[in-house]
Length: 339
Image (cartoon, rainbow, N blue to C red):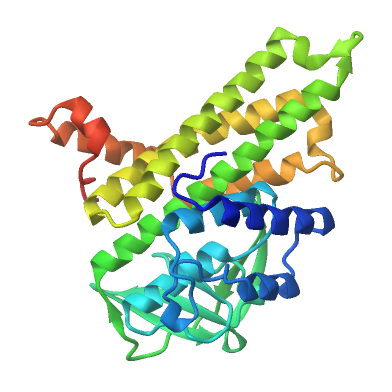
């Protein structure tokens, strides 16, 4: 797994921490979250002036990806890269140790809130006519409902009473938040894809058919090769988007994120299908971990929105680039047209 620009010592610490945890349980554990916080990993990209670690997008991406690889439930993206970042942009940094998550009320009035059950505060965004508002609400004052989805249990806010006179937030910043949200889901997807590939290799090397490991069969080799190729393509696109998110223009971030979501979204179909074909029925049993990763991949993909819409945006960008060389476009990117 590639982690450009990340200190190897940090990677070793992350792996040692998460590997031990995965051998115990992958469910959310507040004690483990507090340990992650004490190690300075809960707010990697936060400013040191408010208890953060002054880390980069590369550092945060490595942590989020490895957490997804081990299948451990931690609100790192929601707490640091979304809620924490947004509060800092509004000059309201969270200097406390409270666990926060994000919830954006959609056009249908539905407010998805990952990890809401365990959060102390939920940063809620909503639109009123042409203006966007936000409020940092105590979880104790909210009603939370947990629903089963193909990607596992998901929390959402119900009977939400939005406070009057809440601060407004710039529409462009909301669009940036949407890009960040999509990007962190692709980071998680690539971590889970990498784990699916490793599980395929382990299973194919040990599972015997007709007196030999199934990895010796050309059909199985083809399935695994497709998993490896699609996972690698998605990882490269996501790495490019992470690099762009670290200090580049908003337009470049939009384009790179659209490429990452498109690549990871299409790769997900191949990885999930082939991984289950390699494993057969055993991959869906309660005892085996494969289905937890594949369901997570599909769940995170759905949170990005329809992949065909991202493809359409990229296609529109290509059509609009009539005065630019296509290879230059592939290398450097360009603004994605607004919807």
